[in-house]
Amino acid sequence: MMPAGRFAPSPSGELHLGNLRTALLAWLFARSTGRQFLIRVEDLDRARAGAEAVQLHDLAAIGLDWDGPIVRQSERTERYEDALGALADAGLTYECYCTRREILEAPSAPHAPQGAYPGTCRDLPEAERARRRAVRPAAIRLRAGVTEWTVTDVLHGRYTGLVDDFVLRRNDGVVAYNLAVVVDDAAQGVDQIVRGDDLLPSTPRQVYLSGLLGYGVPEYAHVPLVLNRARKRLAKRDGAVTLAALAAEGVSAQQVTASLLASLRLPQVLPAALAAFSPAALPRDPWVLDPAELTAQQEGTLRS
Ligand code: GLU
Image (cartoon, rainbow, N blue to C red; front, side, top):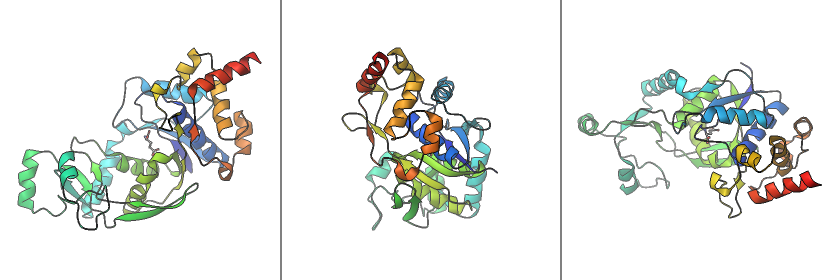
């Protein structure tokens, strides 16, 4: 299998400038290292009709290309179930009947790190399991053998974070993101993962799980997010932050690409940016964006 990088959007709506900037970075990392670039639609959850087509259109519009067919998680349930089966056979899973509320209200186990599943269902006797199973469908959790794991990231260096008995399959039957992402990246030959740094805290769980499934560890680069003027993660309510909204203000996709590349301190057209790209030279801080400025700047450029 060819080594690959990827972008894995959730088709919950239009991509905004933050998502597009992450996609651009994933493309730059992959292409500058001779990797394939794959798009995987993470539609197990939060999928909105029509969103995938608009997202793909927008990725192409900012100049990105990708290899092979689009992969959709909703079409890969069998692979996830196989992985779950392998973990179950190895005694590495258990059923959990807790509600969110029960988890929040449970006294945390001694020495358990904050935010960790308290272990309520870890060692229940079978009779008790049968009783609880009759009341509520079970989720499947990982029986983790550690409480933390250290990963290495191109931009963040060594990072140690929580690994608990996290959910592998929810009690509505939907496979959890942490399992799907690990299974897919391994199956697709993805050995370079570039994504927003909001996902860095999930990485120790994912790398630990990869090891249990016998997969290799990919290279990670968690890139800074785009923030609004209040320094909160950019959202659609922040104004004209999607290609469609910007187009309505007279800003073309090429101009968006140029602005995104400028925010990365790169030449403002893709081939030159690709030639100049170096992870070490990337800004490490979030890009704080005032969408109104972007529009005004572009108007300035157009007028000048
Ligand atoms: N689908 C996830 C998201 O849109 C990204 C997952 C990943 O890149 O690992 O937030």
